Length: 131
Image 1 (cartoon, rainbow, N blue to C red):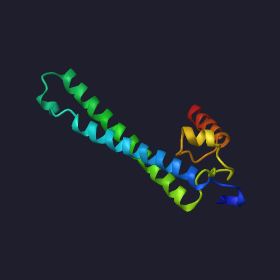
Image 2 (image 1 turned 60 degrees about the vertical axis):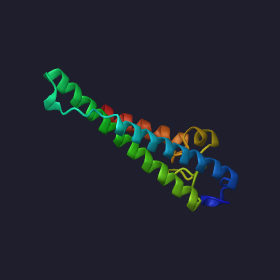
Image 3 (image 1 turned 180 degrees about the horizontal axis):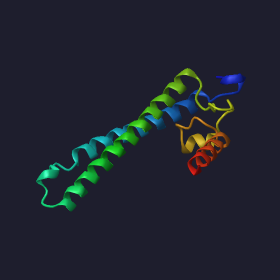
């Protein structure tokens, strides 16, 4: 199997390993989301005795929603990566079109950029944030 530019891409066994890893991450996210959904505070803020308790409940609710947002974003990344496995573009940097190192993919199989392009992206973001 060849990727963009005729570079050797991953063999079937390697792709299955990455696919299984991504599917396990997806399953873990779903389990985590189900468990946190069942553990949410069921007390209405106006039923709490004082403003501190109300603020605490509002903070916990907001925090829970933010976590779900991150989990949803991560789930989209996993699904996108699974589609890349199917279309044969998995492991190819979306910026420079070079192969992403196996070491990086083992750590973050959902990575879409090689380490050099990711570092460049982070430097740009840091530079923009400092302005």
